[in-house]
Amino acid sequence: MPIAEVTVVPLGTGDTSLSRYVADCHRILKKEKIKFQLTPMGTILEGDLDKIFEVVKKLHEVPFDAGALRVSTTLKIDDRRDRKASMEQKIRSVEEKLQES
Image (cartoon, rainbow, N blue to C red; front, side, top):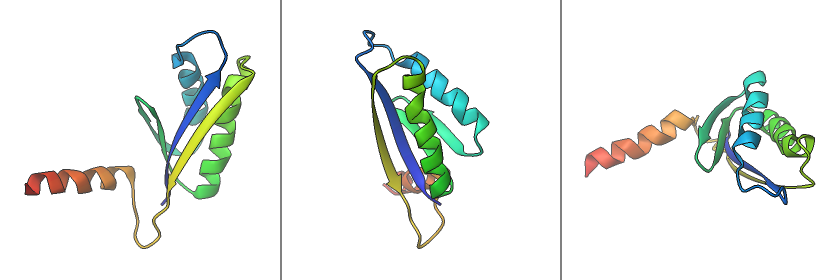
C-alpha cells in the first residue's frame, strides 16, 4: 500500500506560524477515508494512490481558502508492490534492526 508524506506551505502570508494551516488540513483529513499521521515536519498518508492524490489536492487548496496567494506543496510517495507495507511495519522494521545491535 502506498505511503506518502505531504507538506503544504503557504507563502507570503506575513506570519511565520503555520499551525493554523496544519490544523485546517487535519480537519479535512479527519473527514476523508485515509489513514494519516501528523509529524513535526509534515503529514504521512497511507492508502490507495488515487485517494492520496485526491486528498493532497484538497490539502493544497486549504491555504488558498484561508487567503494565501501562493502555496508550495511537497509530496513524496513510497509505493512498494512486492509486499504489503504500512507506516507501522516500516517503523517496526527499523526497531527490530536496532535490537540486533
